[in-house]
Length: 406
Image (cartoon, rainbow, N blue to C red; front, side, top):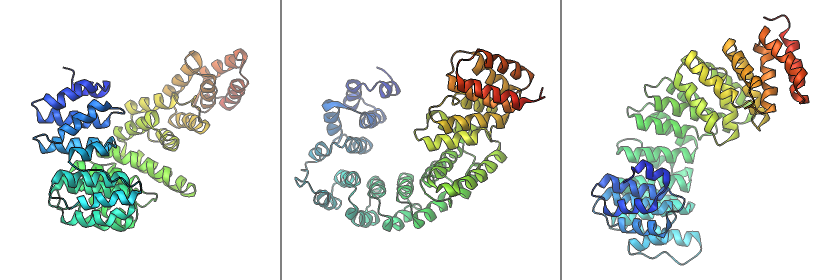
């Protein structure tokens, strides 16, 4: 039998269904349900297995099945498994009202499912009934789902109820409340999160730090910079990601000053995890503004010899990026790092066939800032050999900037 990790990667519905239905291990059944919920297409067989798992002897497996069906938006199957019918009305609030009523059900699983579906529907009118139920709900698993739903409904007016859940609650409830507050934004949500950003629990700190990155204001920056010195590598990395997020969200007229402040504080930390986090954003980030900010920062916080080479490689790979600003920031970042190792790395771009002509042009530009005699010789040859006008222009300009530098 393949490992759960292997099944998650392969998306083998048949094997996952088999584990969910037949495994004697509660943890394996729960994880199989979670993976089925994450799949793009769990097929009808997977949905049927999740409906069956709603009657599992284990409470955690039942909860995972309910979450998975909600994630798959298989609301009809979910309610059928609980012996309920989905309201026929097409109006969102008319549908939501029926699930609001189920928040008071005597059945824990039905209350949990109702909270999940209300989060899925996202009807603002359901925020107050959810908040009211959160204050009286006895079961922590249901409270966690209600907190999650409130974040998805998105009514900042109920932030105070979620802030109350940040303390004196099981960790799962506290973390869901923190995530929800990040979605809500607003002053009250921010103040609540700032109170738990240094929580004694690592997972809670990481959740709070991640949520702060969703605010479109510079107010969380000081607290996030402070977390760059956290004992936990995971919290430090989350802080870097959130700082990048904030820079992507704040108005352009404030971003330059913020960027300078953050870079100065990052560089002062000289922490390898900061560079690793920036490299990850550069290589895997899905938003162009995030990647631009990470590239810009990387050249200025490269750190010691080990992390410097990681930064150089990541920046070099962006020299031929389709986005002109990204490519330009990569070149200036390499120039900012400087030194013989950067010069060698840039010469490799010119000397090998694996890089595009755009990358070669930007490498020539950067060599004009960091190169010496060997760069001049190679650039002179490039001017003679290339048929690309932009490469020739960049190389010629770089030679003139090298001057008498050796």
